[in-house]
Each structure stands twice: as structure tokens, then as C-alpha cells.
Length: 224
Ligand SMILES: [Zn+2]
Ligand SMILES: [Zn+2]
Image (tube, rainbow, N blue to C red; front, side, top):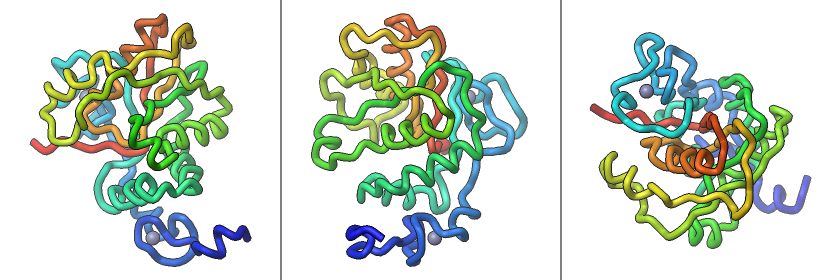
């Protein structure tokens, strides 16, 4: 047992029970997205569809998006604890959940949505990158950091869908000179509107990546 574990005994990030990072009871109850989905954006649907109400008519730069969990039930508090408290050890558990639910993507490498500068610096923890590194290990794929943010768009929270897309369009570039592989999987922590992941995919495609698949831990579903 490390000193850190002695000082901060392990608790379940979802319910707070002492034990491990995620207790069995909470793990079993997490709402997994394993039913019929929209092939394109990964929204849960009544039966499998090629496009759904949420994504049809939208320009999306990625080929497909898949998420392991619905952002509901205990998931928001789990994700909140992971992100806000910088629970690094949880990344491995969450990556395991993703790999149990989503088949390995048929790509050459993994990359991740870059952190927002100030927030990443203040916490020194980048959830999407931590998840991508764990998934790279499980799926035996190389992880290549390729994207960075330019400018500082407003926070996405509270913006309408059309505003979100405009807010992040052009907000990402690849590191100068970095050439991405022909197909790549982009990892994110929470898929909300798809605007951020689409802007990232667009930046990757501009420099020669032909196909971008998105994998996220959790997915918010729009109220209608
Ligand atoms: Zn629990
Ligand atoms: Zn869809």
C-alpha cells in the first residue's frame, strides 16, 4: 500500500463507500449503452438506424461515435469525481468499462480531445488523455497526441447546438507538421453535442486523416 493510499483510503467514486475506486454494486448499475444505436452518432434508439433525429441534417466530421455509458444515473457523479478530484487511478477502471462495451476500433492509432489550457494547467489532470492512454494499452494501439487548442472559445455549457458548433469551429489544430495516420480513433470523456469532437475530427481530416472514429466514456442524450 502506498503512502497516498494510507492517507486517502479508496472509496467508490460513485457512492462514497470505502473499498475500491468503483464498487461492484455501482459498477453493475451503470447505464451501459449496449442496445440499438444510431450508427453515426451513437445515440440510443428504438432500433438500429443509420442517422437519428439528433444527427440527421448536421455536418459531422467524424465517421462514427460510440460511448460506453449513458450520462445518467450514477454516471454524472462518477465522472464529476473523476474529473474534479483528479482521480487518476479511476481511469484504468473506466477504460475497462469502455473496452467491455465497445469493440476495438479498426484504426491505426488513438488520440484525444485536447484539454482546455487553463483548466488543465490548474489541475494537472487531463481526463480524455488518461482514458486514451489506458485504452491504448488495452487495445494495443499507439497513442499519439496530435491536437491542440487555438484561441479560447467560450465554455460550451449553456450554448445552443448551433452556437456550440460555431464556438468550436477552427478551435483545434494539429501540432505543426504532425501527420495523423490514415484512420484514427479520437477519445473523449463525455460526448455532449458532438460539436467539440466534430471540430477535432475536422482538424485531423484537414491534414490528411481520412476516417475518424470517436469513442467516449459517457454520452449525454438531448431532451426533446
Ligand atoms: Zn459505489
Ligand atoms: Zn445519430
